[in-house]
Image (tube, rainbow over all chains, first blue to last red):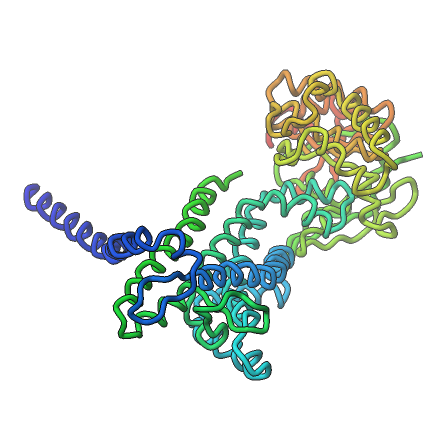
Length: 280
Length: 250
C-alpha cells in the first residue's frame, strides 16, 4: 500500500512539473527565438539600425529610428498625462475608502486594468482622431495614458494602505492637515510601491499595439514632428512589417522585436527587484 | 486651574459604547496616570482628548473636553493636536526621515519658526528636553530607524515637545521597551511634569505607582475611581480598584 501511495505522489509531481513547464514554455520560446532571429539583424544593422529610417522594400535593413523615438516620446507623453491623475486617484481611494467615489474607483480601476485595449483605441479615435482629422502623437499618448492609469492608481493606493496606521496617527497628532499628512509624510513612505506601479505601467504601455492602431497612426520614415502629427512606435512597426511580403521587412521586424523586448525587460526587471524590497 | 476637564464623555464605535460617561479633572503640571485592563477604554479616552479619534469614521463622541476652560470641540482640530501632543505605544518615528527632520517636521509645517537658526535651536531644545541630545547630536542626519527602541521613543517625545504643547499624552509608552529604557523614560516624565501636564496610560500598575501624582482606574469604559496615587494604592475606596491593583484580575 505505501508503495502505491508513493507512486501516486511521484506521478502527481511529474504531471504538475510538466504542466508548469508547458505554461512557461511559450515565454522561453519567445525569448529564445527573438534572440536567435533578432540578434543577427541588430549586429548586421549596427548603429544605423537604431538611427536610420525604414529601408525600401527588398533593399537592405535601414533603421527603425522613428519608431524607437516614437516609443519613448509616447511613454513620456502618456506618463505626463496619466501619472498626475492616477496618483491623485490612488491617494483619494486610499484616504477615503468608504466614500462612494473611493469605492467606485477601486472597482472601476480593476475593470479598466483588464479592459480590452483595442476598445480604448476606438474610444480615443472617436474622441480625438476624428475631430482633429488625423492620427497624432497626442491621441496615441492619450490612449496609452488610459491604459497606464489603473496600474499606477492601484499600486499607489495599495502602497499607502500598507503603511501601518500608527504613522498616520503620529502625523495627524503633529497638527498637520490631511494634505500635509499625505504629501509630506505618507507618500514618501509609499515611494517604493508607487514607483513600482509607475514602472509597471510604463513597461506595459511600451509594449502595447492595439490602442495605437487607430490613434498614433505610425511613422516609419519621418521622425517626431509634433503632437498633432502621426507618430511611430516599435510594436506598431512590427505589426505593420510582418504583414508585408518582403523578406527584409521580416528581418527588420525581428530586430525591432529584440529591441522592444530589451526595452520592456530593461524597465521590468529592475521593477521586480524593487518590488521585492517593499516592506516595513 | 485644571489643564484638562473631561465632562460626561461618551464614545461609541458603531454600536459599541466604549467610554461611558467619564468625568475627570486633570490639574496642571502633574503626571496623571490612567490604569485599567485591556479593553477598558484607556487608549480611546486619550484619542478623544486630542481629537485623533476623529480619524476613525465609525467613532462618535458626546460630551466635552476642555483645555484651560475652552472646549476642544470649538477649536480647530489641528490646534488641539498641536497643544495636546501624543506619544504612542510602539515607537513610531518616521523611518524614512532623519532624526533632525522627525523633530523639525511639526514646527516646519505648522510654521512655528521663521528661519533655519530658529529651527535648529528648537530641534536642539526639544532633543535636550527629551534627554536624547547627547546621544544623537553628532548624527542628526542619520535615519531615525537606526536608533534603538528606547531612543526612538524619546525621539517621539522630542517630536511632540517641539510643538511646545500644553499637555503630553502617552499611550503605554514603555510597553515595547526594556527595563533600562523604561526607567529613562519614567525619569524623563518626572522632569517634564515641571513644565507640562503629562497624562500617561499604562497597563503596568507599578508604573502608575512610581510616577503618577494622580491615578484614575478605568474598567469597561467607566471611571471606577480617581484620586491621589498614594490614596488609590494604599486605601482604595472601591473593591474593584483594590482587586485590580492587587493583581486579582486584569
